[in-house]
Amino acid sequence: MPSSIALYKQIYDNFQAPVSRYDCGRKCAPLNDGVPVCCDVEHAIPLVDKQEWFLLKSRSDLWKPYRARDAQAIKELSDMHRDCRAIECKGFRSCERDNRSLACRAFPFFPYITKDDEVIGLSVFWDFADRCWVQSNLQIVEPAFVKECIAGYELLFDNDPAERKANRDHSAVMRRTFSRQNRIIPLLGREGEFLAVEPYTHEVRKAHWREYGRNETFQDEKPAVAAKR
Ligand code: SF4
Ligand code: SF4
Image 1 (tube, protein in one colour):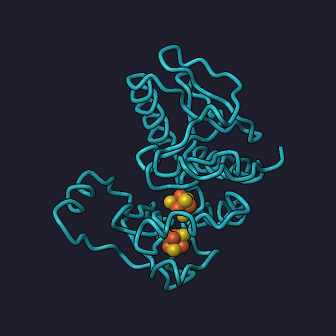
Image 2 (cartoon, rainbow, N blue to C red):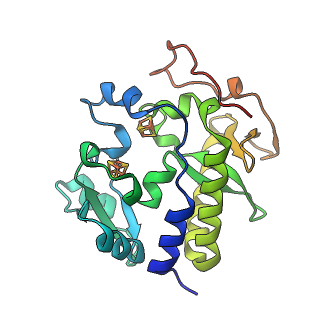
């Protein structure tokens, strides 16, 4: 069965947990003219499946189609899949928690898929590490968030193999990138446990969150208090 409005509704209903008990937007916004980075189309253009767009439109006027404002945005959207829609919301001051997209709910995480095609946890959109405070404080992530996020994506994958493939391909790009940089991939396992993917071997092992390192933007801050595990 392909993705549908009903499927996205089910995913939204079951995926409500916040990433952490912190309002992380307060941590990154001061470095971005007061706007949380992941709610700023200058940093991230929200992309949704066509069916998800139909659902959002039916629930709220929070979102509208995104119109590219410059050559960079046009280039970024040029290879967008025909079933995707680029959209933008009214801004973080008008955010409606129930009407956030799946990508909003999951950011800065995506489901990490191994070479053997197994979904083993969540990793991060590493391109945002210099602007996203959460990525320098993965110990704050609540296990309930990890479970709900993975369950939501697995429901989507069961119905939409192309979504699974996109995340598998993204995981492969991450392995190549981190191997080149000789860095471990930070990974939150299915129960929220701390894991690491070794560069080169891609072996998955237990980790301590302090091994993940912090981006230099946030290096001078005291680490935030870890969530209970
Ligand atoms: S998820 Fe990252 S980029 Fe988004 S508001 Fe939180 S710290 Fe900022
Ligand atoms: S819907 Fe909310 S979380 Fe999503 S981009 Fe807009 S302000 Fe941010």
